[in-house]
Image 1: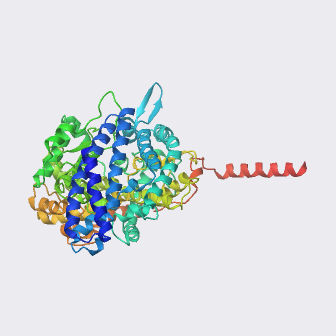
Image 2: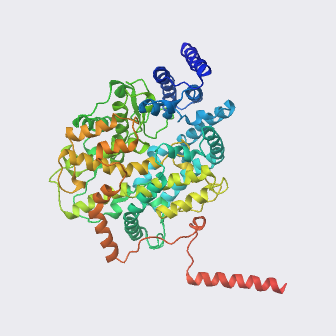
Image 3: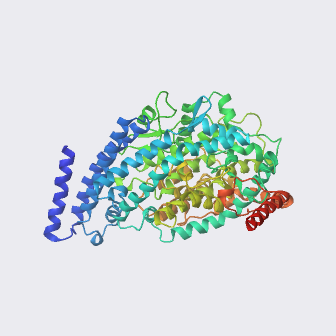
Length: 637
């Protein structure tokens, strides 16, 4: 209560001053106000994170209620701070850092909703949607399958067409219909909250975080630059899947059925590498089997990741991290298994929550999440409004950039995950790059279209009556995939991806998959690497670590082009390093597709009928005769 009372008293001082002299122009007074704000923000943000952590690691009604209340308390603080900050004449200030701090304080999100009843409802709705997603189960005979690890493992490893279809549909039946009406209400309330902050809609607000007027045009230009690579990969994978499952299941001109790509959302295809491997008989790098055979567990994976970070001279994880993180799924309680990194705003407590399995995918994820923690550690002494990535995509790129180095055969050999002599020839290189492309290139259109859909929902171009239909139109347009069974507006397939019910913007991942290759190339150059970019391992390079660490320390204190320039020497996002990385594979794919007569692209057709069996010429003729007979008989009546 003392802090709450102090908050009121402190802000009343600002208000009294504002009445005496209109807007406050005293910059020193503004600095003092910001110092006090920072202390209070740490308090309320930390309490909210603690309550949220308790709920996500033990889902029950009591923890949910505590989480909702702590979020509301934080939102009340954010709204009061924002309202009182408007008493300062920020435009009259000369210090750019002070001005930027005040401008950052406008990003209060849901707290902008002034109607307390509606804010309460929105906060509860967000908790309920996350709970529906996190507790979803698929009935399977006498057992129930949870998303992680049951469904993810089956999609990764099964090669049974019908079983994969059962898993794919089962998850969407378990989660989507329940979320549909909840999501409609969420959109209305969220738009109202953001509208009170002066934005057109939620998409407009989310895009503002990138501080780039041409952001949407820049994204489209980047997509057009990488799209030819994706089309070649898609065509090759479609052909190889057709050879495995049969041409009756996959037509060479059609989109790919979404359940056959080794992932619940077809976002990354590395789990089907065995079906599309370019050159058989080469040394196969099977990180999952190697870890299992050598007795690795989740803790070993986390230790190995930290060791890579510290080899670059970066900051190690804290004692609190090792004591309080949840790195395996606990027994006897429901948890939100989706991997995430947490900053508790007290400058010492940082955690990862993850239901780790001993797989190559999860080894990558460990590095990804630890990249977030490293960012937190580097900018922990910045004021609270600056404790964020230079832009949201930067935050996602850090761990993935390091994972590019970790995944090289050279590094895997060094840490004991490749035995024997390492094969190094052109065919082995193409196999390696194919594995990387199934993760990196395959992901790009999914990452791009996710928020294309959401932005259109928020601004009304997609209505509540056609949300699912428009989802599949975009997935077909960008990814070239279709649902394996018929879908309609009773389904809500977007809600079956965590970030939709969890209210997490997704375009950050598209940005991340572009800029991580810019960071990687810059760090490779700093380490003195020569040769093809995809062979670079900057392990134990303090020069590379210094370059990255200096950028991370900035947080969001400077516009992202300045942070980009600090690490890469240029101020813009560019797909050129990514294109260079995959150039040998792109050349090979283009030639392989040409030699086999494989066409790129796909025939457009309405996804609502995608599950219908294709009619042969004779079947079509029979159907036509039946229709004509019916018409003739009606005329005779």
